[in-house]
Length: 98
Image 1: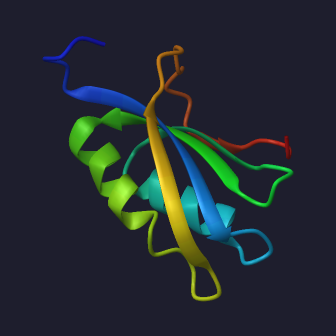
Image 2: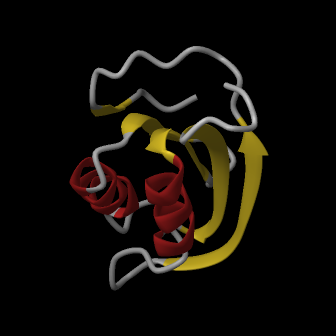
């Protein structure tokens, strides 16, 4: 994607109380509502990793929304990085824990 592109892809590492609190299901619902493609999964260290791709404004909204989480979640930090691998616009899915 070039700098003028209306689309972007980012990788998020979300830390805090984000496993066992329905964070992934909540995140998927929000991502689908924003018409984003990508995936989300738990990591063995207790964090959650997500890749979101779509219209830049929707990706930015998802980055902001990610701080909320469902009622039992408490997000302490979100590391954001550019994701350069190709993402097929095939919706949003949950991957197995890594």
